Length: 479
Ligand code: 4AD
Ligand code: MG
Image (tube, rainbow, N blue to C red; front, side, top):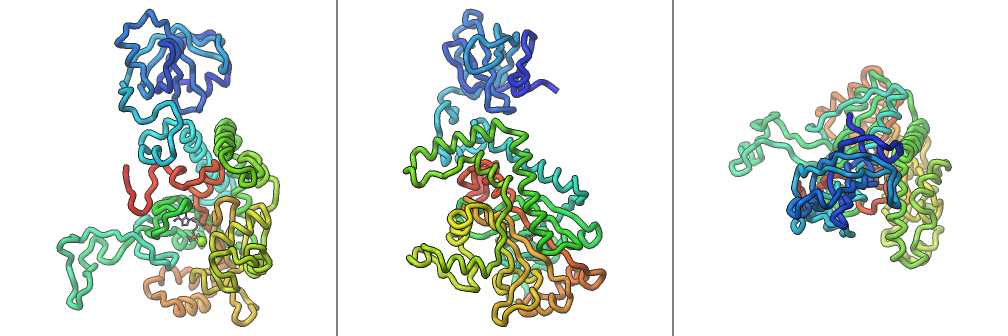
């Protein structure tokens, strides 16, 4: 493999001939090209002898152009880099029209770059974000593989609604203009490709549970889809989720696994790309300079990540969380928009208070009310009447909110069937799931990590649309 710019700059090796290909970031004084090949935000300085080139060729060395440069790597004569290429012969591989190229060497707004998502990879911010996204993804596999988890591919098209939330994208080959109908006026899915109703998966959990009942420890890592109309900085219609599922594991083992994984992966990404973390840290510091002092964060990105690595996550029950909220200043001063009382689903403002104001670190909340959680979660024994809870856990991260959602699963067939009846979930359609409880059931637990929310946490990016190459959100499916 060809040496990349990152290696050329970091090795500091000099006095050798080299040929490099990349994209021009800037060209100044008709002599100095800043060349980037995506391996780092640091450019290789290419120095040409202006006299060797005619006017027309010089005009083609523009921001965004793809070039090949051959010359000698020497100790840099200028400041800011260890080595540079001198006496370079430049060949233009792909022109970039100066006036038409949208990504100019200046600060662009995030909105503008989102509209030009096909070109934003070529900016420093997105270079750093997507190199880190890659490292985080690899780090996740590394963590699980080192512990002998089996990577399991769960299906993308499915007939089940794992979360029972009903926010699914339908999959069909039926003709929308001439939809076949049954006699009683319903769409006749019998004539559809799969001879039944199907949708894109919202979670691979139920299938992962089936596999865990054979391999003991498995994980999925794939795209999931939710048609929830949430236009927020934390929601995507298409996002990636990591879902481990572990046999012989209870809610405490589940929390340990999630906390260890998050720490492992954050550390791994920081070790792989210290320069990118440094760049993004500085970017946020600059961004915060526009804010009043009291709104700026106490820790910068780098310090925040170190803090997370070095401290235990706080673990509290839902009931404790509600008590803390009811003792809080914003509650007493009626500053919360949503009501606080036992039984509510914690709203983002509540989660933020717990994490950012009260504990100032990641918090794991367990034992949520049964009525606000999915049917498959294990019902806790010995609950106070009227305050039935399930062995669920959510990890809340500073600046993000819920990053992980998981639970111990209901392994007792009778309890599970009873819960499905109460929630009107048709047992016949789920008999394959119930079979695991009929044949060799055991204690097991798992969780789902929202991959983009983790990437947001590591990169400090404020909007989830800026950590996935081509975001899908309500009203937007471009590229
Ligand atoms: O809490 P959720 O809905 O849990 C499940 O899907 C379970 N089946 C997981 C399991 O136990 N195996 O989603 C899990 C995580 C959330 O904590 C959040 O980080 C992320 O997925 N998430 C989203 N990320 C981006 N956009 C969305 N619309 C998301 N919805 C959930
Ligand atoms: Mg959740």
